[in-house]
Length: 249
Image (tube, rainbow, N blue to C red):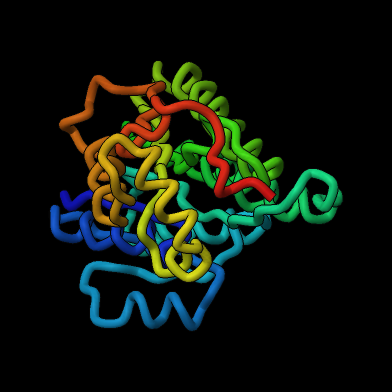
């Protein structure tokens, strides 16, 4: 039987790259995003996909999303919690509303999607891959909400791995380092780009495809004895220290 992956934040970036790699490997994919025009464009022309518009921070929408995914493909073998928001700013300028906006998607969304899909994943003895960030492993400036949300995702993944392992469900987390996305390249100054290149042992940004390779591997049978792990797909960035002068306010 063809396996099914549910990928949130699938309309662009790492989520879209992951969707395409799943398809290359013979999976079918439920693509989820709250941006309908972007999702329609991303899913157009792709075979073996089912596109669903949903906001992962809203419980009712998440429940409906999972129900629709099961109605379409009958099973969920892998859940990739990729949807997230990147909101950077100094601690003093991060009010509670800004904090909650980040937490609602980056942390609550991972919790809600996993809770909604647990029974389906138990049935399939499936896999969960949550997308955190190198910012959840090492501190940096301007990331009080974002970095904290991603650190919490890493701990949440460990809880999932410990509790769900007896049902044959694996849970792992991928923590990307700097990735050459269109958004990153639009907002990173040349000084920031140069600083990242200097600080990363591989001397470059990663690609969306490289992050997708780690995600799809962890969802596959090739990773059948791997659970409760955090894979930093970061070119060695985590090993180099804390903070970059070019990223300070």
